[in-house]
Length: 181
Image (cartoon, rainbow, N blue to C red; front, side, top):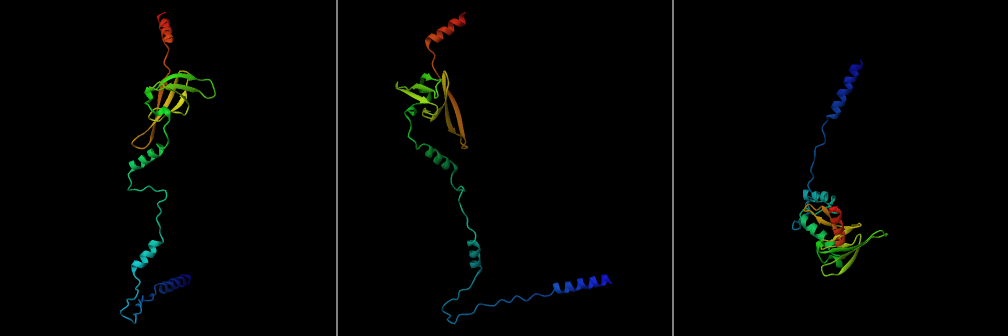
């Protein structure tokens, strides 16, 4: 009995659910009384424009895909070159001669001499040489200058260069005498 009742309920639900829908009737737009003025007919183009206007593309934070990557690197290099060069950036780094060091104070200092015979006092962080090297360390007998270059991939490469204090003749003679003993 329960099976018969269940079967009749399923049959009724199937008949009701599979009924025919209303036919789609397309009503043409009313024709204008004045035939010389064309009527505005809604089209598929208008509905496409409405859908397109709801989406907006923003370029904030995105790189222009048609712009050269090398041109971007040049702009970065120009922005870094805006500063005025210091007096210690006139010559190549190997042309400067380390003439003196003052260590043991709160801020160590070094004295370098350029090819013109002019002396310059440098501290840690000062620029030295045409390639914009920075003095990164001042030790007892040398200074370390770090020069920065850009690789073609855009990464920065840091090269530390050591400039040693020239030894005096008496030190060299003293070392030779000790070596002979």
